[in-house]
Length: 628
Image (cartoon, rainbow, N blue to C red; front, side, top):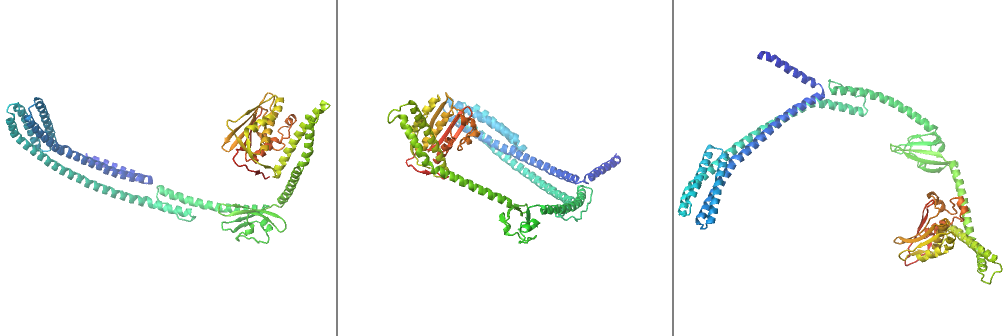
């Protein structure tokens, strides 16, 4: 049988060895075999360590569970027996039947505890002698307790107690003997446990050291078979990356390293071919770039990070023939960014753009034609400004000449209309005088608005702020437009603030702001509509005057047109609603003079809300002047 088994065994071993050699051909196979070997060693050491720890724990538990517990329970039994004797003495001395009965029950409990403790001691004892002594002591204690019940009956108890003490002396000796035996067993078992633990520790250390040595041996084998070839391949790849394309690469072996080295050799050859093609393409690109730079109408200078010229086209030489620019020389400071005029009168614009390598490109453009157009535009602008200033000065200077005759017309027409010097013969003359008075007053308002606009543009309009009662301002303004609102069948409402409010404003300008806004609201609100005038403290130090109407409104994009001087949103509206378009612009200017603002919220067909923010009054007044 053995003869037939041996060839099969050799065949199996040979097959396994062949499988191992086949696996070890590849790096993955080598790593797998090394991992299997290390895993087996680790598993062996781990299993043995777990077994050693388990066995050591078992010995520790056994050392505590048997000897130490037997000692503890033996001493506990002895303590309970001694307590029973003390209770017996107290029972003999007591004269109360109730107390005697309680002491009898207490001694029975002690006797039960002694029996249970000795039973545990007998169970946990390690030696036969200790077991026998525990058993005999338990029997003696039980017999002593039975004798106690028999003798202690209320007759001659003191004498019976002495008899019981004589019987108890040997039992106490048995307890001492039992404690000594259990302690001796504990020491012996502790020595056995310590010896076993030391043996396990030594074996574990030897196994761990052996596993470490085997691991080191496996690491050395892997380093020789794998790490050194990988290091050589890495060095070759680093030299190729540094541009050394003639590095020698020897591909040995059939594993992944051999295949990697073979691939690196092919990669080296491919990189060498790519580099040759890249150099040729770069030279071609440089040639095309130079041709493009040379053919451009702009002057181009390429400067490196050190400030030296790399490329300069012929256009630069035509612009600056005296500089004699050549490749490699530093860029002259005169070619910095900005504008430059040549001696022949041409203008050049120089701009600079940074490059990725820290250098920059200077582009030089001929802007002579652009400069000529700029000079022409500047001249036209100056002429327009001169004309505008002349217009403003004319309007400012004509203010007195325009107002003086108009005031006379208004004054005399008012005298005739009111019949101050007697009745007028024909009623029609009185109506004509009223028409002259109304038209003259309207013309005077237009002239005043135009002159105020001119003063604003000229920077000569001044205001003198002083405290203005908001309620009085709103009420009087509403009274002024009341006839106009009644003719249009409109309702004008003044919402008075709940607390007194005072503006720090020029009284005349403040009245004109409110009157202009009210006049516009009444003018653009259809019959049956409503105009509301209100005021409130917006934030401490600022008061908001608000005029809201239910008029025709306007689109959001039309609001800037309405705020521009002489602005008319729609020609059809200008024909239907008379006006110059100066009211809102003047209100905005007057609000700005006071440091405030004007804001319009409007929607077509839903009305308009104009809010003017002006400063709140303080103790001191001040004069404000606006510059153009």
